[in-house]
Length: 465
Image (tube, rainbow, N blue to C red; front, side, top):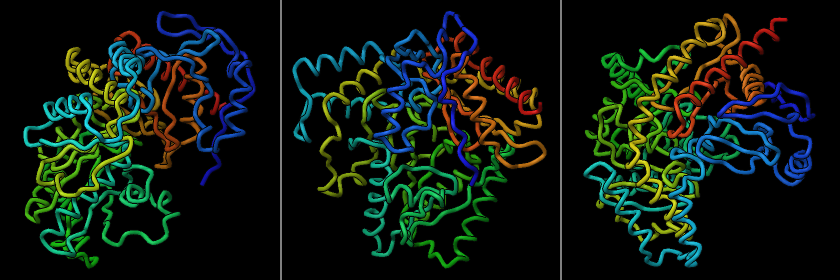
């Protein structure tokens, strides 16, 4: 594994920038911010100290501010949390009202705000989804989904415990979530992996364009091939309790072949098994649909929600049907459905509906795709594919004439963009990934994409010299 590229920690002069949407007016990193950075490095793990070195002070809508006058256009949404914009005024007001009561914790005793949020989510969900269980993190929801699939399975036969998941997927950072995730390096610490969780290779080629997802016949053939491989490995297909998939794999905004997911759904229906959509990153308008799985034209049995459901604060939710979710008295949580995150979430969801943010994300898709395709035309030997829907996009960056992901080049590009006033997502996988707040104005979105293009031009030129 290549050594991680270290972002520059020595303040340096950068070009001053002043536009309507961004401002860079100091050295970067800001000299006065160094004690803060050093404190974080000293007292927090390395894993908490490898993002871009801007010390956030406040965030409003699509902009990030530090204490020293710098302003960045945000293309991260706090990793797809703030779909309704940072510091959304309706959310802030709802949070303030809950604080002023005060009502900071209620365990899982009944609360009006939690009941209203549950009602709102069920109303927005597909018609057959009539129950919601609140938790705190996305990982908890995927762990819960695994449990619900197996409880549904063992009602039929005691060994119906099998769970299908996909290579390259990410379902969280707890043990069950990482076991389901298709990233072997993330599973090394676990030791004895669950023998009833079965991984299938991701059927989408990250190095090819999006057209591959629309060939439904080929997608179905790929599924039939993969399920036969699973059976040839000794898996009794009648013991499959469920399957979990992300509408897109986050590292590359990688969508699955539509025919593949349709075939998976049909297989699970035949086996009386459940389909779980992990919408933690894809949900609430990010893809231009309320839920990303809608692109596949299938029904799902369980929806895992997190991140953008509250728009800011730690809250997650599992949506399903009564007969699936009303099965276990232990489905409760200390902080799940806590009053302040619920207040934030309810205001967030109402704002999304009122301002048609799902439709806005779909409209802005064209702006993002056109800019990424422009980038691909400029660097055909560096960008081999662009994937995405709505406002979740990524460009796959490789070393020339290879399929080797160029992780360091991407890091250098996003660092240069940060020096120009753009806050990007560091994937550490060789993809330029973006996810701005859905509220971002068109001019700021275009400006941000142009910054990425400009940064890539400069870095590629430097690399060649």
